[in-house]
Amino acid sequence: MMATNLFDDILAHAEGEFFTDLLSRENVRIERIVSHGHASLEGFWYDQDQHEWVVVLKGAARLRFEDEIVGMKPGDFVNIPAHKKHRVEWTTPDEPTLWLAVFYTA
Amino acid sequence: MMATNLFDDILAHAEGEFFTDLLSRENVRIERIVSHGHASLEGFWYDQDQHEWVVVLKGAARLRFEDEIVGMKPGDFVNIPAHKKHRVEWTTPDEPTLWLAVFYTA
Image 1 (cartoon, rainbow over the protein chains, first blue to last red):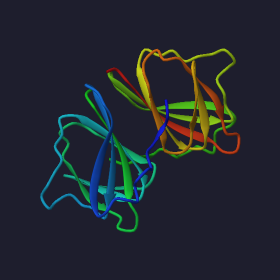
Image 2: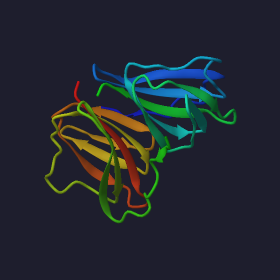
Image 3: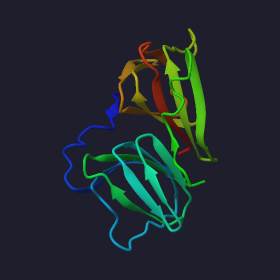
Image 4: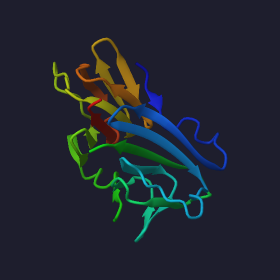
């Protein structure tokens, strides 16, 4: 068994948002997301069937919910219940923002 | 909703190992582990009913399996199938080692 590294290839990514499945099972999916100066498209909302626990490990971001905005710095995590609408309002243009998301069924 | 921070209170911990549940549901549990110069007790092996995906976010560690040792630095992650015996062989005494573990049923 060799460990794989979460931080590999981050700097190679250009503008935009990149998703990598790190684990994918029936009840749980762990995803790495790298955002670089990225925001969800105007008017777009995530509206997911699964719950999502998500932490920012590098960079900085703002998540928008219908009723509030949550600022995220490295180490900050939130739990987003299924079908709670959210969007990425902003990620810093200064460096890549690394998210680790755990999607799960309760 | 306010984000909680993964790195809070790390330095407050003394020698040993400290566990905090960040999320606990039927099929998934997310746990923060802070180890400081810690090794599993002589002869002790974890032998878990759930699978465990685990990443080191700070510090350094060595995980021992029955047939090999895996070195872990920040960002390194491994997936440990249920009942695959393992133990913490070593974590650095120089700083706290922060693990994020996702326990799940397939």
